Image (cartoon, rainbow, N blue to C red; front, side, top):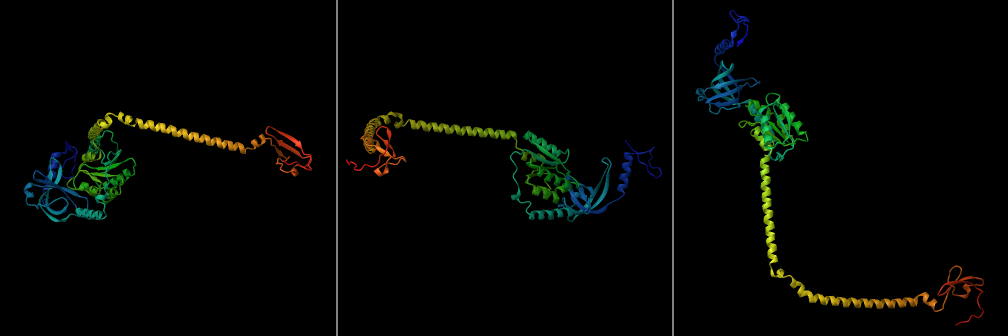
Length: 416
């Protein structure tokens, strides 16, 4: 492999006579090593120990410029033991160019504290402010649904975190449904895109729980999840929210405000989605316990019935009828006697009332030979003056009626 680079200096490579990559890298290494050592100030944004050596990153205090550094084990013993991520330090470094990797790193010879890093100090101030507002209170945290119908997932596109959540959730409950929103999980776009994704999924009525997932990273890469806009969007979220950033050493502020913190994206899937096999086993166990209790209850009731049936009072139940047969016969005879007496008295009373009614009836009077005389206006004629001469009369007899015409009052009416 050859790198076609042209130099203006005499003897420099040309298009027709280029340097090899090895030659070019060697010249860069020689130039870098001639720079010597320098004291630099910055903030430790990554601090990891491997094989006794320290590999980290140092960030500028005023902008986003970052360089990697290496502390060999021989030098590490001379450094303060409490150095950690977030510390503001001054270091004596020498640039080193690694030929095989083609990368530039700073070899540290000395390092000392300057004070708390600006970034960590800013995060601590924000954390205290949000805590004073009650955003981290346990009472605010909402319980997760037992079996969410739809899960909202916020993660990087084609990320391992997305694959872990989807795979593990579907292994536990194959029919689980997801609504995935891709957002930046590293860089300056993280706060804006993650906050917007949280608001979008929270407004979706079908989403029952939201997972924000990222597969770990160094302290600097996780800064976006401690941004105030992300934290406040999570606090305002009505839908239960799970933070699955996957970094144990440095917890972003999103972990504090989330309703549940999962250690990894895989852990989030296990905490949000129940295991169908475990649930089926629980159902079977519940059914077995229920069947056992019902069977025991029925057997107990059968034993009680048998005990009751075995008692002498029920062993020969006909004694109840035998002992009460004479009383029943006597009561029946007495009832018939009383009923006949009541009927007899009622019949006598009815006859007497009928006779009295017939005696008082107008028909009975007519049957004795009397008649009822009515004038033309159907009024009863009681006096001779009520039927003047030539008045039309109606006479009602015991059987039938007839009409007559008055000839006037008699001079000497007979009185009988």
